[in-house]
Length: 143
Image 1 (cartoon, rainbow, N blue to C red):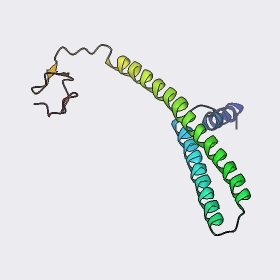
Image 2 (image 1 turned 180 degrees about the vertical axis):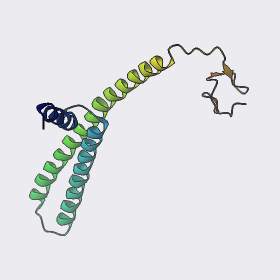
Image 3 (image 1 turned 120 degrees about the horizontal axis):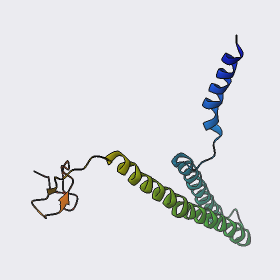
Image 4 (image 1 turned 180 degrees about the horizontal axis):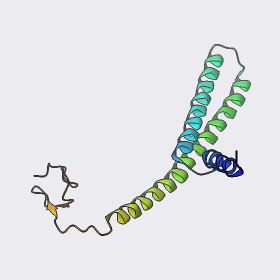
């Protein structure tokens, strides 16, 4: 085979494999991390419930119970803090980026297309898109 065929094959493999190693913040990674944190939170809550059961059955001294319970509560607090932090920061940033990009995509798609017709709701008078089936303000079916 020629060198050109080998180079083409190698370039194709790199093109296929490269996205697998690309580090970016995707919805999938955010959901996976959130699921892992949620699972960890549930495990810690289960550990606390087991600990309280063991104490109630007399398997633990009060001193040990308080010490271990405090460490589990601290762990639960750290997990919840990470979960809330991730939700508020990563999700909100990603949502904002997607909203911003969505607006740009729509503007690019609509370039050259201008519609002078407007649809108004007969119930509340709100302006709607001409192709709307329901009013965006009151929800009544557009006629």
